[in-house]
Every structure is written in structure tokens, then in C-alpha cells.
Image: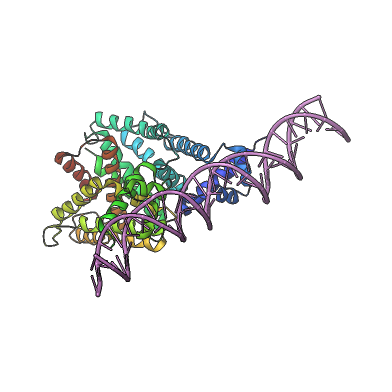
Length: 188
Length: 188
DNA sequence: CTTTTTACTGAATAAATATTCACTTATATT
DNA sequence: AATATAAGTGAATATTTATTCAGTAAAAAG
């Protein structure tokens, strides 16, 4: 009986290694050692390295989409709704920093196919819908949604890295401040 | 006599390959083939793969710093000065997209040492100084400079990727619009 | 409890990749 | 022009790494 905990251990090992060595310098030997299992066992759970990386990528993607839009209620007014999603995404990336880095690394790697990459882009879909709503309500600037989303997500990503690498804690106050920065940029 | 053009060809090959295959999936064979030279010749120019990647990383770093602050005059008022640097950086990353991606990939790779990484961080130094000046003149928000810089650079990076991957052209108008987005975020 | 099936192991093998080197070609020196 | 020095080559070698597999341990079925 294949062990769900073992999947978790394997994935955990990859995530731990990616921030240290990057995708490039991660061997199957490294992974199995970090996971505390034999190298051969990796092949009980996955056909090959490619499949392993893609499976983890897919898992991360689903996970992040699920968490990001948790508790979102389209009935509430735009700004608080946008704020809660923004906070969700920020928190998610901070608390799952390794997943975040792993996904970034995968994006330009030979492991991930163009199709998988396109699916990943759909993470942004609900965010686009939200932006469209904000524009309809004339609350945010009427620019191409692509530009707005890129701006919002890009700024957040770099913030997450900044916070992580400097080891500073993100207080509630600082999160609010940072959200305001973003809001001032996009508000109409 | 070692050929400067050959350095350029080798570097060019690595940059061309990194957007296709990533750092992970780039062999010395790939590089030499792309550069149109024999594999052995790579070892005339560089001790090994590690040295090659690090040399290119250093070159990209110097190049980008030099270009970003070109034509900056500390005497002119803050906003136009900030604007010209912002535009320089944006243009640089757009026109040297491969360098930009290469540098990002290196950051979490096993090729780049912690020391090299720290040096790279210094790219931002003059930008920090500029931010400090803007704060002293009470033109931009009085937040931690780290947060402001992360926000500005992060938003720009994602914009660059967005523009590149969608193949859209960045008109003067759109560049201005995007700068305004950034300015609205940080202005006091 | 015995049998069967499945997971697990890690050394052995295969495949991929970095690096070397004996040799050729080009460039500089006298 | 003859000689010396350096660059360039790519097949051969060394190294690293993915993958397999024969054997062992554990779990399910009977």
C-alpha cells in the first residue's frame, strides 16, 4: 500500500533542497537522502525525475489557488474583497516560501512543459475577474488588466523575497502599510 | 591571442539557451554547439562550467548597473531623476531580457556563491540612496527603503516578463502609464 | 499460519555530462 | 621563412547522475 506520508516526505525533501541548491543542483540521490528513503523507492512512487517534479508543481499550483481565494465572498464590496485576497496570497507565499521559489524555478526549467506552464498561468484567472469588477465599479484605474495584475503580483513577490531573506517579521501593521502601497498604485 | 568576440559568442550562447532550457538543462555541449565552437574550446576560455557561469553573472551585473544609472544627474529635481532611472532599468531589462532571466535563475542556483550573491545585491545601492533623498525631500512615503525598493523592482520585473511573453510592444504612452502606477504607489 | 502480493532497498548498470588531451591550425616572434 | 607559442578541435576518458533489478522485508489475502 503506497504511503501518502511518503509522498509528503518526498515533496518536502524537494522543497527543502530547492532553496538551497536550486532545481539545477538537485539529484535523485539528494532527494532520497533528504526524504530518508532509498533512491529506488522514489521510482516506486514516480516514473522518473521529470514526473516527480511535474507532480509537485501541479500540487503546489492547486494548493496555492485554493488557499489564495479561501473565504472570498463576491457579495462584499470590492476593496475589502480585494484586500482579503491580496492578504491571502501574501501570507501563503510567506508561509510556503519554498513552494513559491520552487514554482518560480520550474517556470524556466526544462522539466515543465508549455502546457503545464499555461495551466499555471490560470492561477491568475480569478484575479483578472476581480480586477475587471473593480474597473467596472470605477474604483481602480482603467488600464490593461495584464499590466495591473503583473504590477500587483510582481510587487508582492519581491516583497515576499525581501522579507524572507532579511529575516524580518511581517507585522500586521507592515502588511497594512504594504497593502496601501499597492492600493494607492491601482486606485482610480 | 584569446578572442574577445569568442567570449561574446559564448556568453551569447548561454543567454540564448537559458530562456529555452533554463540553467538546469544546459550542457557544455549545448553551449559550444550554440556558440559554434568545439566543446574543448570552452575550456581554453574558462576553467570549468562553474567559472563560466560566474563570469557571465558578473558581466551581466556590471552591465546592468552601468546602464541603469547612465545619464543620471543628482542636480536635477527628484521626480525626473527617479523617472529617468526607472525608465533606464525598464528599457534595459526589456532589451536584455535574456540577461535578466539568466540573473534571476542564477540567484537560486548552486553555481553562484553567497559572496557573488551579496555583490549582486549592491546593484540596488544607488537606488537606495535615491529613495533616501526622495524621503528627505518628503516627496515619497516614509516607509522602510527595503520595502519601497522591493515594491518598485518587483513590479517592474513582472511587467517586463508580462510584456516579453505576451509579445506586446511597450509604447512610450504605456511606459508613462506604468511609471505613473509606480509613482502613485510611492508618492507621499 | 501460509501464501501472495506489494513496498522497499541499495548496489549494479546505463545514460548523460563535464573535462582532458593528443593533435591540428592559426598567430606571433625571431 | 623558420620557429615558437597559443588557440582550436573533437574523440576519448572520467565523473556524475538517473534508472534498474535481484533480493529482502512488510503487509494483505486466503
